[in-house]
Image (tube, rainbow, N blue to C red; front, side, top):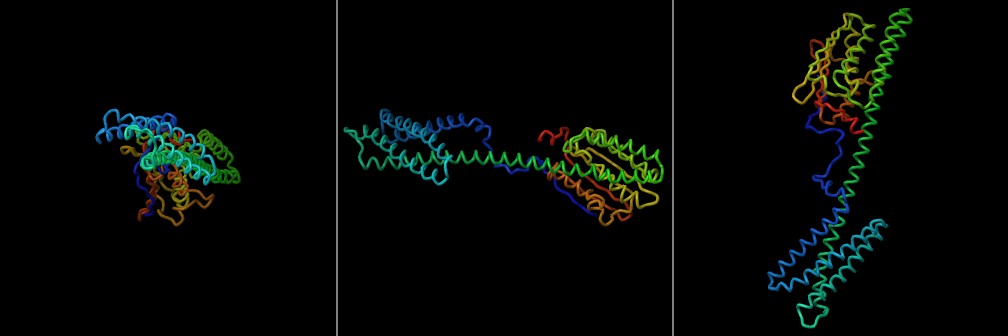
Length: 381
């Protein structure tokens, strides 16, 4: 038994980009509003903390006034810092870093002078700025402004990462859509090659009526394929209808040697799957089961709904596993490998793809995909 399978943890290929363990995207959708909220909450919390500490240290309510002035001054200075930091981020990196450090140092000194002068009204009867008081204030103001600056750049870095993740997701979706289209477009020349070869054979045998009938069915089949986008998903019912149309074309070649049978669960008919997913599987069965046997073979297409999963099986009564059957078709380089790639692109790890061969003969391909009613690929595009 040849087997190619993947677990289905419920994730999708369209969400393959790695997300951060948490996201604050809704809060930062309006960056200006988010800044003012954080600024107000942060400095209000700082004021509350400093006020409680001052009162607990024995200061009177009047002694809290310098704390209020300190918070207001810090609020105003950080507003200036945010504007200047925003300008520095647009400059050369080394220049921006130098200016950021210089601005932080200047803001710390200014904040310390104002803070020391304000608290001097409480500490002494002659207000003024002394070296000792200034050094103490420098420590406090540097800690506050450095912490604020770290938060400012940290939040902006987070937003940049989020924007890059969005861009990467967009590019991956475009690449996935392009690859799906490429895989899907491979099927048309592959099918046309075999069908036109059959029509050519009928013409050489002067069986013009059968050749005309096959051309008519071919035009109907191609009309169906052109009506669907290459990356679109169709319902199981639509896929089965086009598969029956394809088998009518092949029936012109094999007649009673090819005996198709359909067993479709009515509950699964509305489920969506990539267009032309089953046709290569049936074509594979025709090539390796019907063609090499004089008596032909039975081809069984079964679709079942099991909970939230759609189970698809295409089996035949041919000779079983043949070397090269699991790989690509020799004619144009597509086959089961194409189906496997399309499933990976459409569902990521959220699918199962298995091939089986029994010792007594017969070969089957089993697919399990999520039960979906919407065309997720078209929505993503």
